[in-house]
Image (tube, rainbow, N blue to C red; front, side, top):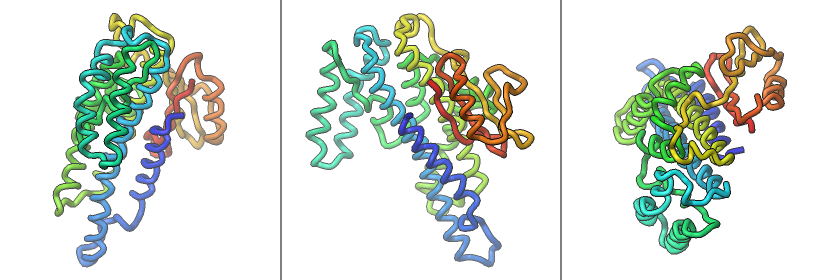
Length: 307
C-alpha cells in the first residue's frame, strides 16, 4: 500500500469533515468575530488542501522511482526522458533542496543524491527519488506532465481527463489543477481573501479527481516496467487512459454496487461497503486494477490499487 496514497486519503477525509463544521460557516453580518475567525480557517484549509495534492504527486513520484530502480531493468533500457531526469537534469532539484535544508542535513543529502546518480552507471542502481517536483517550492501542471511522460504516458493531462470522464469525475483536469493552484495562492498571499465553503468543496473534488487519475495512470505505467514491456520502455507504444483497468463501487439505492470497466449494469450489489470491497479484492479482473469508491454524494471518496 502506498503511504503517499494512504496519507492523502486521510487528509481529504479530514477536509470533508471540516467542511461540515459550523466553525468555518459564514454567519450573519452581525456575528463579526465568528466570521473573521471562520474566514481565517477557510484560508488555511485552502492552502493545506492544495499542499496535500502537491505532496501526494511528489511522494508518489518518489515511490515510483524507488520501485523502478528495483525492477531489474538495465538503466540503459529505461525511457530516455527518465534517464535524463534522474541524471544530469536532477542537479536543479539537488541545488534547490540544498538551499532549503538545514546545515546539518546538507552534507548527507548531497552524498546520497550524488550516490544515486553515480549508481546509474552500474548494474545495480537507485534512481534519484527527488527528480520530479522537488526543484521548486510548488509544483505546476507541467511537473505532472513531465513525470508521467517520463514513465511512458503520452499527453498526460489529456489522458487524465479522458480517464476522469470514464470515472464520472468531471473534465479538464489541467484547468482544474491550475484553478486550484490559483485559489491556494490567493489564500496564502491575499490577507483579505474570503474563500467560500463552496470553493473549498470544489477544491476537495478537484484534488480527488486529479489524484485518482494520476495514480491510476502511474500504476499502469509501473505494471509495464515490472513486466519489462519493451514497447513501452522504448516509447514505441505510449500508455493511454485505455490501458487503465478500473472498477467503480457506488452507493446506489441503499446498496454498494460494483461496476467493472465498461459495464453499464452492476456486476454485484452488497448491503455494506466491506463486503463490496472484499469482492473487488478477490475479483481483481486478472490484472492491476484501480478500485474507486463513491459516497452518498455520488462522487469518489477513496480508491485502492488491487494487484
